[in-house]
Length: 86
Image (spheres, helix red, strand yellow):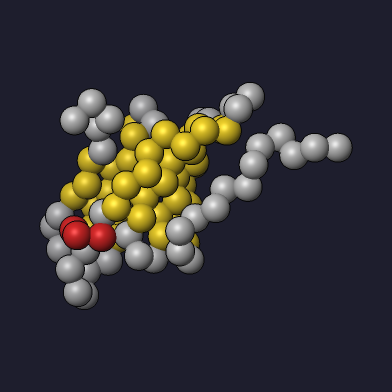
């Protein structure tokens, strides 16, 4: 048989994986953020970096997907909200 979707290849070792509905978000240890839409076809919908928000000593506090877009909060009181229209 064939695979239903291609392998999801993160850019570095993973720090978090979060899935909601048909969206899967991975956050790598280097701050790369990737979101794939998994359906009849697997497609990458977000490819970005949040490494500039995480200063030394800060860590990822929470990560969520709202309408397929990543929302991240860090322990240094910084947040990352992705909007594909900006």
